[in-house]
Length: 343
Image (cartoon, rainbow, N blue to C red; front, side, top):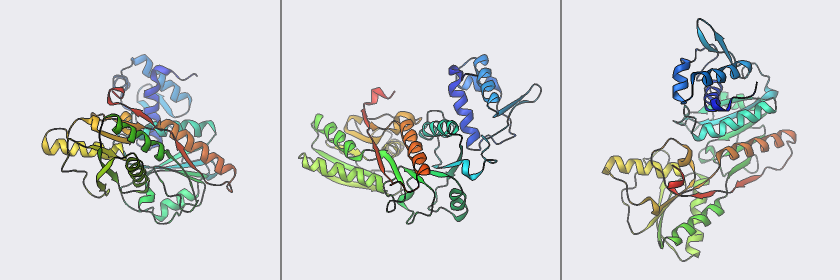
């Protein structure tokens, strides 16, 4: 049965809930009319989406009882040789089809199925530890994709199977390949952004993890070479709040992460009841504000997070095929996007 495109968002949403365990095997789905209303499609289109998933063996319909989850793509039954693991953060948008996690997960799930692998998703709690049970589980898989900045707190890499990191910069002495935005090209784009607006003084803000520190460092180097002035650094630690107390209207602000800028804007609104100033004086890197369900949009140098997922999967497959293959840093080009283009 061909995938019904009208119900594509519904299908991806249910897939995500099943694969992450939010719809456990044996659980009952919400009423179909509610799902149809959620995705603004007709009841018939929603029914076609359910039938598509039933034909894949993931759902089972009962005329009297409802629709039930039948399988998680055989994740629990698959042998380790058929399993890939995705270690991912707990994003608040996990239930939203427009979220960053979903954008990458949907591609990984599709590619894994095409290559006859099951995908085991391990959401990481906000603690600085990969416990021994998790490490053991990962090392039984054929390959692992890390979608979390664990290099900001994990001193040694305990995963021994082929591994690819997203949102990371430290490859632990060549133990894993990395996929992310080209930090040098992003810094060049940001320099051009401020120069085009006649801004000469820029304040740097970044999360104190390796990939974000590198983005800020490269921007500072290129900005100074262009004759610009760096007025200060705001290095936010993940444990701290994201509240910049003072914004000067005559300078620009470079944020090494969309998430940090959004957190700062949100806190400023709550504290002072207004935005800091014109968002045209801010720019961030990575493009999460284009796909996360945030109401505030701002200029960003955006990654295509579906392409990130594809690149990470292909690199993981290459490492599985040849474990002696040299680990690589794969940098993808970001695209400058104005706020009006992201609405």
